[in-house]
Length: 536
Ligand SMILES: Cc1ncc(COP(=O)(O)O)c(C=O)c1O
Image (cartoon, rainbow, N blue to C red; front, side):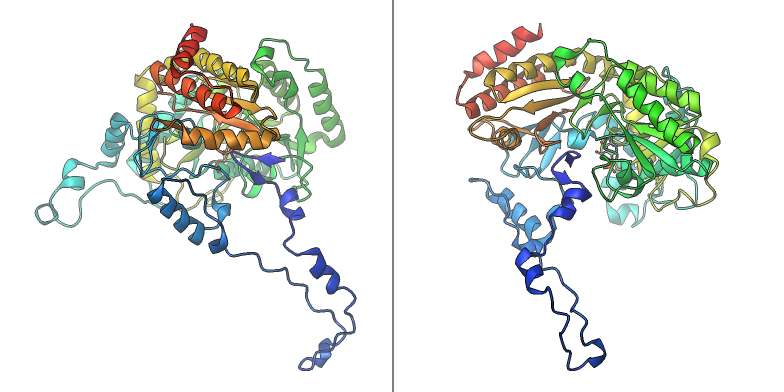
């Protein structure tokens, strides 16, 4: 099973990829009679079997593209001096020199439509001027501070501190107040009255789970949706994936999330048979009863392949949790701040979670995350039990304020919802190429599932499409995509601020690129006209 927004393997598959060649294992077998001249007391003990050395990162062959001299040099530096583990596999390995709005620019000056928003982070686009100005305002970064003459203004300027461990800043107080107010203003936000900051999504997930588990040590089990993605570290890693991972935490029990029923937009609107899901929950309650502490799920299965479910599913989970006093954690790290066409996805799910976990779009590019939820449960954590260097740091808090300002004073949510049908139309049309089998999504987050073709399986087709989109049209634009998720699904998640014209142009470009790959070819004019016609 491949998880997350790329080709990262679970511990199960990592384990099966032992570095030790079979032949070496064999040759060391049966060496119990070995003698050590300098350590006679060890005679008879077999030598420790050392794994064969893996090639150092410097031996990784860097991805290279013809004509990208500067980008290729940068890719080579990275390949020599960073392990590949640092990023998930994306066959283009785009080098992004500058970005503005929905575009990235390569060092060679090629323009790429950003169909990733980072990884669903830059919902307001890249470097939005008004956001930057507000961010600078909250940090008290005046033009004199940033641009003033050192000699005239002095070596240090007075502004908001960038780090404030175990102290409190006014910007933190302001952002807590504003975030809670905003969250509570949406239907379903009533219980969410307290904020626990973190720097990454997985840290916030870990903190939410800590708070729940501390509530009652006798209730030590966590329910998590199978094939969910909540991060890779600590408890976030434990609730990610499925029971197929032999290293899983025994405190985590997995439940099913609908997938086949919602694997293509053509199935949307059909009623969902909740019977099997209810039965699974009740069986777990029968087996473990009040040891079950909390349940964590996503509004839609993101890294697991982009499966978007009817609200009835989450409402059933809420009913189950209510019936048994189980805390419900909704992981909105990916979904929050407009991604689903709503400020928060819990509104569309029609539920009141006990905790929402926020991240990614919360800071529009500044690393910040937060658990917003029940203060009475978080109170079970004592001084220092959820502290770290970066939580509640002023940079993150200023970014949250600037992002809230934008969402509260612009029509970005309405514009997102207006463009959803344009994307469905443009993406559905890709099925004509024969290389796209299924399309799903909502708001401004879509998954297109590839079909086998070109003599390749669907996973390799997905890789070829990502590469072809990056290369785009000769002398023209390309499209920046993430590496396939869940094997053969390509994520389409441009910034929410993409305009209608940009949406139509980029969807037309994607159609031409995939058609050319499939050997079918379309004229550029037809591509745009057809997207326009089908979006009406
Ligand atoms: C739903 C969800 N939860 C949690 C995470 C983990 O966030 P981070 O990578 O910031 O730790 C992700 C990341 O993709 C995610 O999509």
